[in-house]
Structure formats: structure tokens, C-alpha cells
Length: 253
Length: 140
Image (cartoon, rainbow over all chains, first blue to last red; front, side, top):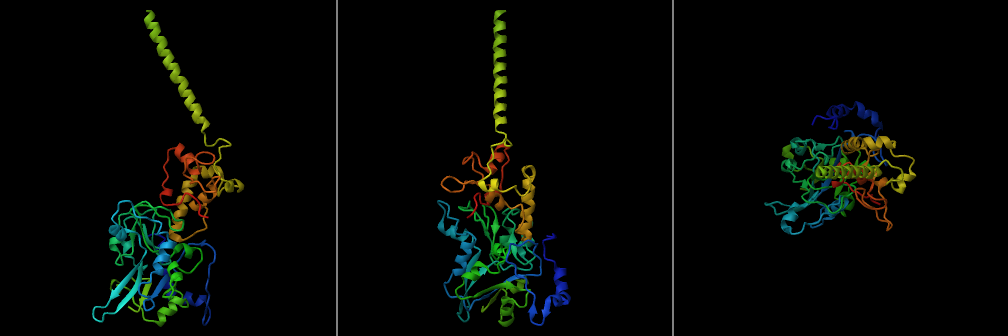
């Protein structure tokens, strides 16, 4: 775990002191924003932390546009049920990066829907338990699986409080170029990292949401859309008691 | 006595046959030398390019080091502009069939015989695991 690809907390603390922060503020209200439009040519650093806010008030009941878009973007549909498999078992075990979850308050009877995916914790339990270091947190806050070193032990799936990870049980029909996939590895939402590394700043689920319920952006940038929304509306972390400091926040639950 | 000479000549004939067949086999393998001119499996795109990301001799010996180093930098640090991109290898070195469809780089048959990766990896009996997950044809 003590490798150079880990988040540089000392650097973050230094930035928090405001000495460096004032350097990037050109004038009150104007902060330099470096938008990259080309593929990334420098290593990511912890000056950016990607995060998301989901407004569950806008999550229409039964809508699964975000899940469909995620499946399509990451090639999860190109994975068919093996012959002779039990359909019910298959449905439980097929890879899902994003799931629709329905919550019901037993006292009031209020029902809310939300998409649940990897919460991109600052202190990810999956990376803590990984015996090979394949589960890791990239410096810009994205929790990922390095499939080159994943041995498929599934310890991370047990450790994740959000049931966010999937295991590839069978050979795949198509090997997607954006998310190479093979039998025997664990995988989960990676905030569409291929898009971010190509200079885009949106995820497939955000683009697909008809209600604009998903806001994605840089949590470290106070002027990003997601930071402004977090400052304006009340939001919660799911299982905040675990003190994981999740990168995905929800409002309206 | 005559029987013994006959036995000896039979033994000599067997020895000669084994020797000749060994020579023939070695000549046949020499013919399969992957360095031989005119045996290039490189696609039109690779032929048009002046050179690979490094010179050919370096690539033949060290391509695996390049790919392995750059995969770690790409996955863990997000750098996407590196030379040692497996997608880059496949894009450049995959051949097209007459029908216009790409042939997998690991295929044993296709235009010009066995394809780019297969031609050496099968010959040297070195299995390659890249394509358990990665695509063997470029995405257009």
C-alpha cells in the first residue's frame, strides 16, 4: 500500500493551508481552471478529487437510464449467460457496476430510489484487504482494480459495504477496448476513467440521466458544479458511520 | 560371418536415414526463421510507418518490458500517451482479410500465414496472456 501511486496527503494538507491555494486564485472569484482536451500525458495527482452528487428527489421510480448507459459504456452487456446456467443465479452473479436500489422508510412509508455504485472512498476497505495491491485508490480519488495483478480472491467484494464489486465468472463474448475484461477478475465503477483520461469531464451515467440527477466533478475545486451543489443542498454519505469519506454523496434520502 | 556384415550394413543404413532426416528437419526449421526477409507479417499501416516506437531489434527483444512498464503507468497514474500501448501494437500490426475484416493478431492463419503475435510466440512456445482480456483486433 505504501507506493508512490497513493494519495499524497501531505501535499493535500499543504494545499489546505491556503498558501498554494492563493497562488492559483488570480483574482477574487476567478480561479485558474486547467481543462485538458487531449489524452493525459502526466501522472494524476491529488490536486483533483473526482466525486459525484446524486439528487434522489429527481430519481424517477423505475428509471434505469444510468444503469443502461453504464452497461453500454463499459461493455457489460457483451457478456451472455453460459449455456445451462440457472437464470436466477446468473442474474445475481452477472457483473453490475451500478445498481438501482429502492429504500423504504418503515415509519413514514416513503419510498426513494437511487443508483448505487462504487462510492470511491478516501479510505477504501477494498484496497485495505487486497492481498496483491490490485485494489487501489488513484491519486485523483478513483478507486480501481488493476486487473493485471488481481488474482480473483474476491476479498474486496466481502469488504465493500456497498456491494459495489462484481466478479467475472465466465469467459466474455467481446473484449471491450475501453474496459478490457476477462474471466477471473473483480471489477467495479471507475468513474469512466477512460473518459477522464481523455480530457472529458463527464461520466456515462451523468450524460444519460434524463432528470440531471447526477452531478459529477472535482470536489477539490470550489467552483465546480458538484462542489457548488454540495455547498447549497443537504447531502449525506451512505454508511457515514464507517467514516470512509465517500466521493459519492446523496441528497434526499 | 556374412550375417554379421548384413547386420552392420542394416545398422549403417538406419544411422544414415536418421542423419538425413535430422538434416532435413533442421533445414526445414531454418526456413521458418522469423528474421527471414519477405516473411513480414506487418500490416500495411506498419509497413507505411517509418519505424515502430523503437527500432526493430530492440522491439524483438524488449517489447514485453515496454508493454509491462507502460501498463502500470497507465492503469495507476492515468498516463495515456505512452509508446508501450498494447492497443497501439494491435492497431498497427493487425492484418485485414480481403473481406475487410480484421484477423486477430494471435491467429495461426490469415493473410501471409500466422499473424503478428502468433508467428513468433508459437514458434518459441511462449504463451501470451495479454489477450485473455485485451482485444486482438482494432476497434474502428
